[in-house]
Amino acid sequence: MTPAAVAWIERFRRFLAEERRCSPHTVAAYGRDLQSLVAYCERTGLDSWTALDSGHLRSFAARLHGGGLAPRSIQRRLSAVRSFYEFLQREGHAARSSARAPDPTAAADGERREVETIRSNPGKDVRAPKAARRLPQTLDADQMARLLEIPAGEPFAARDRAIMELLYSSGLRLAEIVGLDLGALDLRDRMVDVLGKGSKGRRVPVGRVAIRALEQWLTERAALARPGEQALFVGRSGRRLGRRSVELRVAYWARRQGLAAHVYPHLFRHSFASHLLESGAELRGVQELLGHADIATTQIYTHLDFQHLARIYDATHPRARRAKTPAK
Image (tube, rainbow, N blue to C red; front, side):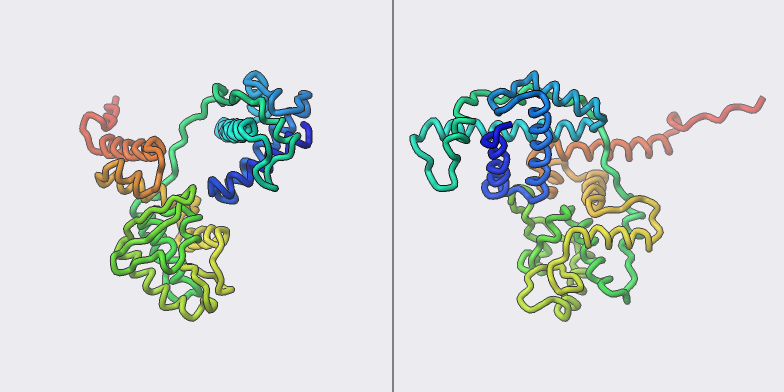
């Protein structure tokens, strides 16, 4: 690929970070996906984005699949390509509409020519191999209660319990909980203001047990946080707690409480949604609580709910129980 072609990947990364407000993790993932496409283009002799067509992308996907990459990962790479070409088309249209670059950071002439002739998105009709449906893992109510029975006395036990109670009570993502500031929490109305994916805000309720855990943590936090620190959850340094620290503490308490399952922060969110639906919550309401843009994302939890109902049926209905084989 020419340097002008490759330069568009960095411009796309800046667009994702500054205009789309994507997380650093998402920006990095898109960058890696597109670099793998650049490597493919260089192996096949393609030197510009205008030279790539849907046939090339099908070959790209087939090579990834033949190399053992999972269908979901291939789907993500193709999604990155489609988003990238949407960006190139937009920039190409802007380049054709303007006789000069609008600002010093705009594309150079060589880069502008790279996208001026892009008229279609080659990834539009290319699909990855179909992935098997994989249902999210959850903890049942008894396992969750056991996990959250954190004994007092250990350093930061109050903080860890408050984090896990809030994860389960409100179905927050890991990035959302480490990003919380003190001002986001409304103890009186038992609500928390969350900044989700794409910088979309939502206001979600917090349960009474989680509120009590948060009140206890706030009492201890006052002596631990550095002056001026606004983060709700802080570490030993007195600064905002990081994602990896939360992951390690959740895994630590799962081991301490004797849970055999692999426990990680997003498992609380899965369990939150599943338990709500098992208790009769409406799917649309659960969608709003989780902050899903598309209800199809929430619908996967209905399959978990159906599994729960099937187990009850199999265990209790006379016609569902397996008959004992009569003795001969």
